[in-house]
Amino acid sequence: MALPGGTPTKETKSMKNRKLNLIVAALAASGSIAFAGHGGGAGAAARGGHHLPPQRGIPAEVLAQFDADGDGVLSDEEKAAWKAAEAAARAEFIAKYDADGDGVLNAEERAAAKADQEAARIAALTEKFNALDTDASGGLSAEEYAAGAAADEDAEKVAARFARLDADSGGSVTLEEFTAAKANCAPRVPKGGSSSGGTAAAAKVRR
Image 1 (tube, helix red, strand yellow):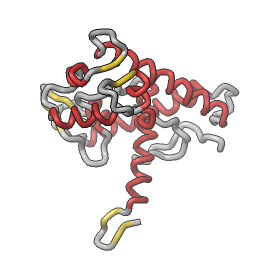
Image 2: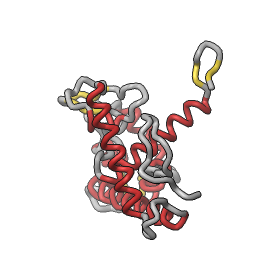
Image 3: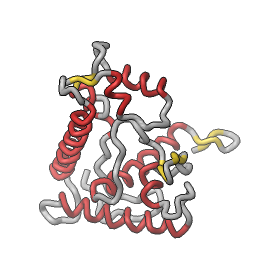
Image 4: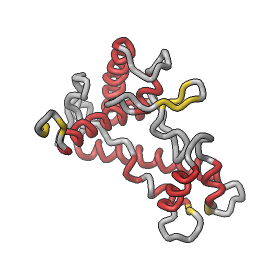
């Protein structure tokens, strides 16, 4: 549904975002794309040392993976490659967790998939945290955190992000704060149905 003049409503935008999340989740789970960690470069496609803004409606991680010519836009051929990888990734993802082999993921199988995703998320962020914690103090100072940001990232934005992570305003970011801040960014478990590009899911998910 759109507002007068063709402006999408919040509901329409939310539905599109949820569909894109499902695509990215399946691709990430299959290893078809990789995500940036905290800080530097998240949300931008890097080409030739420059950060390009994401193409409208295309997740930055997908653009970075499938923009073969590096022009910052997915051509028809590049979109076709994305959709093919999406379909294969979704099928692989569902097959991995379809314990009873019935072609659908029930609640228990979805829970197992989510648990694996969460464990992988925590492991990746813990590795990132330990790399930034150069003095092995168990907490990241503002300087240590800033060292992990992209060289061209605005220092004020980096400082603001650090302040948000420092939930207790203690002047340093603990591992718990570091991982908790990204809790809502974990890829969602695909639930079947059609993607935003019209590719049918490999299987439906039993609700």
